[in-house]
Amino acid sequence: MRGYGLSPDDFKKTLLNAIEEGLSSLGDSSMEAIFYHVEDSFQLRKEDIPSNLTEFKQALERIFGPGTPYLEKIIAKCLYERLELDFEEAEFVDLATHVDDAKKRIITEVEVKQDG
Image 1 (cartoon, rainbow, N blue to C red):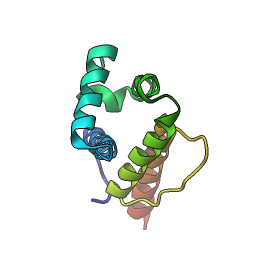
Image 2: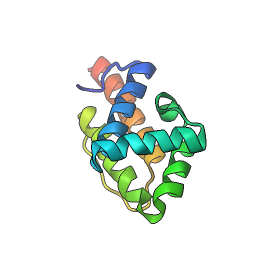
Image 3: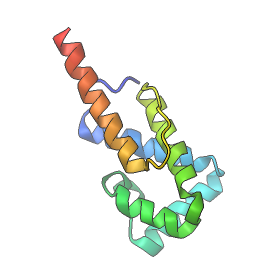
Image 4: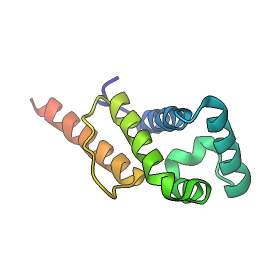
């Protein structure tokens, strides 16, 4: 699925799917437990996570501490794969920054494709 022409809702769905895929690397039951804990303890419903990445990161930090950047990187890689973008690994780059970068790259690529 190339990211060209994705609506904001489609992008959010793609991001949520990438989050699910990334967290499922810990196991499906662990993923479900994380989503439950994030909703129960942090009042952040699963479907609202793509619009609240800062809150989601804070919840992950409370749950995983120093392991959070590793999970963020896995989720970002999943997002880039789903959008068929090349993932550029960078130190100290959080999930929200990767998401913003992916959005910018899609918009740029769509503009270039339309101009060409």
